[in-house]
Length: 294
Image 1 (tube, one colour):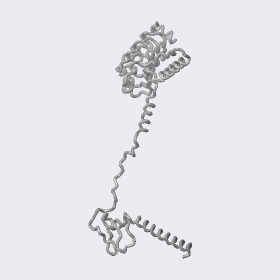
Image 2 (cartoon, rainbow, N blue to C red; image 1 turned 60 degrees about the vertical axis):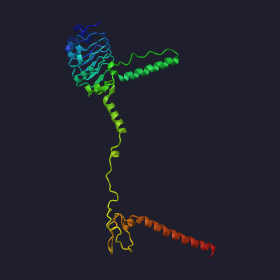
Image 3 (cartoon, rainbow, N blue to C red; image 1 turned 90 degrees about the vertical axis):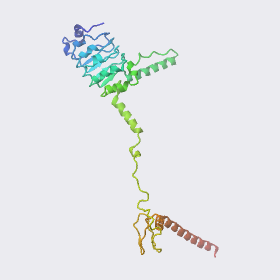
Image 4 (cartoon, rainbow, N blue to C red; image 1 turned 180 degrees about the vertical axis):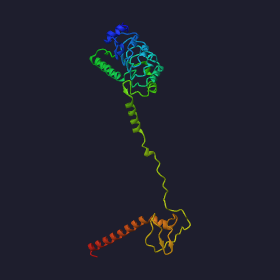
């Protein structure tokens, strides 16, 4: 198992001045310790995936680091090592051993973090589909179930019911979490809620309108004073009609004039219908007489 000595890093990077090294790939090296990585203090990208690491403590010296891939290790603790990486924007920690929700508090110290993985939901879905397809193929061939992949790479903490809400509370500016875009998910939720919401106009109470606006409940002149020979009757909403005997108090709902005015249209239609009926009767009588010769 290699140790991160100056000679080893010089050979690996091809550089004799480790301070100018910006990117370092230490993946698949069977590393158990990162002691010595601080010899490259100006790293901006570091890949330490697929090793045997249990902690990230030496990484704390890499103050310029913006991208860190520490997936597929045995890491349990995050606070010691990540808390000083204020420039970090991308962090991958899938398939490790993070089990405590308290470890997620370190994210509040990473103000620029935009992409964070403790699991990869897209990979999980792909592996589940492949595993299901493999099982179906094995069943169709009459053989045993096909072996699936080695799990989706989740950390134990991902199974906590408050995992997502707690994590987003510590890192509210995240854009991608476990392979899902946060803003897209929130937009979908808002669109769904908007579709389910009752339109505001449905909840508005219409303005109150007074029943029979313009009419009076006054009973002081119930009989009215309209002239008996008046031909045109007033209609509701019209100005008061006058006669030789004075104004007609038809606005009183208890007066005879009000009843006449309120029923005037229907009365006229009824009278017109009677007249048309009489006319038809007369025409029918004439037609009958012409047919009988009487």
